[in-house]
Image (tube, rainbow, N blue to C red; front, side, top):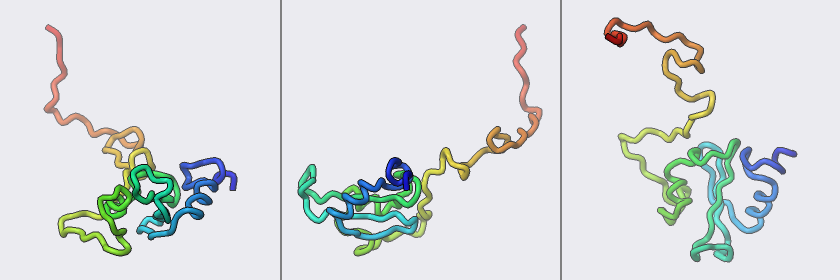
Length: 131
């Protein structure tokens, strides 16, 4: 409970949740569990468009927003993916959030963080010697 009151990086604070629930309507949820909202009026708008909000499930990280919802959040698409689904091309890969800094981040062979040993030099390296 205290975490929800005082920390914004673990989802939304209670104040943000209360304000969004009071002024916006739920538009949809993505495959990661993030919830998307749109303001009922443009009263608090900067540019006469209705404000759009996201409440992250878990850690608040902007790269967790998939491309279709990202386009809607930034007013690239007028309709949310729940109304007009985003069409993926055959060559596109599914969205993966940025994993840098997490335990799931890629670490090359021999990296200290992965606890491995570097492969020995292959013999094509010759140390420089001053002459």
